[in-house]
Image (tube, rainbow over the protein chains, first blue to last red):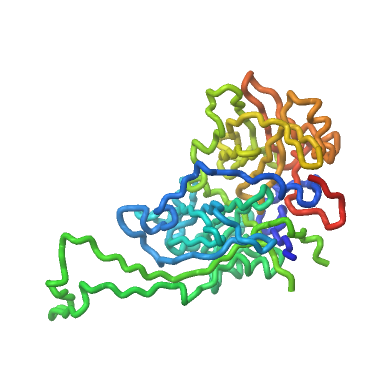
Length: 264
Length: 178
């Protein structure tokens, strides 16, 4: 059995919810009703090979810590969610979104947009390459500012209308999780843990390819002199593929999920 | 210890550069026969429009559209009116779209349905509308605009608060349907 641990609509710690959370009763439909409603088909959102590698979408490489995010999307019946669209969006390494209504004025990176897209495979698996987003300040309440922990927004569809999910992935060990009100709005420690990408050493890539400098020596001012035979000024610089990998598995609502109220 | 679903989190206000594309606002060619333009406004509990910070998705059968609320909280999508749906148990659903609203200050999507004003008989027989208190049903029926336009405003709170639905299931043992 899987339980639903969504944050409440109304969260006084995230003040903007107060005028946006419904106040009248939310109407309950019969069990399984929405699960029988065919989900949306955004087939016209084509997924290209560069959409899942946010570090290759521009002429140069973005600044920041390169990361791989990978995982498996399953449903609460423990079946893989196959061939489903995942869309992601995020800030750059400095904590700035490309979106024009970003308020904070951190620097843009001309080599980073921050929008990703991929499909899960026949086993529900997905993989993205990106940059770890920076933290940025935000308003939680009137007169109260805080920092958003580093996070990446995820949007998923799944098979039915009720499996539609927008969420955020956080990073294992981030001290800002202690005060991030979006994260802390989840009323259940297991639910919070679901949103934390876990560093996975075995999936990380350590690549040593900087052969141009291998065997170089220094001149007497301390400047590096590369072995000239290894340098071709016309060749594009080698890309070091190294990246830290974070696992982020996602469980969508299937026909077997139960509401939070069932818990006691 | 039982397991939990991945919880929802707000989309925040900065989704536009990644999620919004003009071609996603239309499921049919706006010039095509039968194309219906739906315009609406997102309104908060003080009657203020929610501009730029939220978006809507309309789904019915194989039609899916997505649009951001722009100035004055107004969105516009172009769809075709679906046919009535017959469920396996013989129940007939009036033509409708499922509608989800995401945005800043919404910790998870608001889920509602849009019905068509020119279907009074089908709407009267619809089993989902029947679950809604009669005084609130009108919030789920679009209002006719110009010839090819419908208006479907979404009020998050207030006197005319739109009827929203729960995505999670009723407890086992209660009435089953569909």
